[in-house]
Length: 283
Ligand code: HEC
Image (cartoon, rainbow, N blue to C red):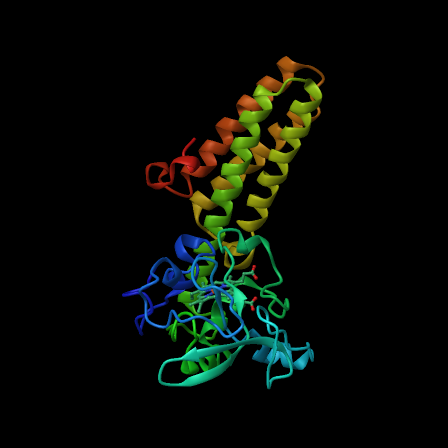
């Protein structure tokens, strides 16, 4: 959320392109922002944000000899890819390789990262914004957003990079828990025992995802008691949802689902104060 005055130098600016952890650009919510001129191939500006980040120029992308992907647009570019041409005030026409900035709330769960899967860990994906590949684009600027400077280390082991990655893992787990709770509630309302079992199994998979996300990267070796207890409650929820998914009768399934819901809410409390969460995450 460290965006300053959207795009202000010296900040992280993740929120400028991943608004509230989603895929909307904060810029696109403000059509009055400088640089909102139409592109040559007529792709409209605004809400469905695309931007150049230059993942194509990462050393790993080059070493793997991955073909350059120009993302959106169909104009042949000098790089050899097909992309777009932007008109930047004061700079002129600039070739652009742009991608949608995707939602990052479940990014921890979607390795490998970026459109060409060149990056293996979440920490490296976050530290990408400190690398020369990203700064090269930053200096040209982008026709949609103008330059979006990101002040961050290029080292995946940097404490700040680790903290942001941990934050993204916790967001991911909160989304998994929200989804598991929703499945658990729906299973209780389901018409037949088969439906109860199938929906409970979906919830079980979400609980498993949450445990995995909270056990990877810097959290692998965590000594944080809340996190360790959170994982234990999620394991209890996984077990209870599994029992519900194979229960022989409605009463047994109901009992298991009640236990699962209690364990899931207990696990959520250990990650965030429920009062600070959006309504759909508080149920
Ligand atoms: C200029 C806009 C912009 C800024 C600023 C930005 N991102 Fe991104 N982000 C993108 C785009 C575009 C992609 C997709 C790039 C691609 O696939 O080549 C992306 C991809 C990602 C991914 C990979 C998701 C996946 O599943 O592959 C993560 C994680 C991410 N960004 C986190 C961050 C963080 C953390 C910050 C702040 C330090 C940040 N981003 C700043 C535009 C931006």
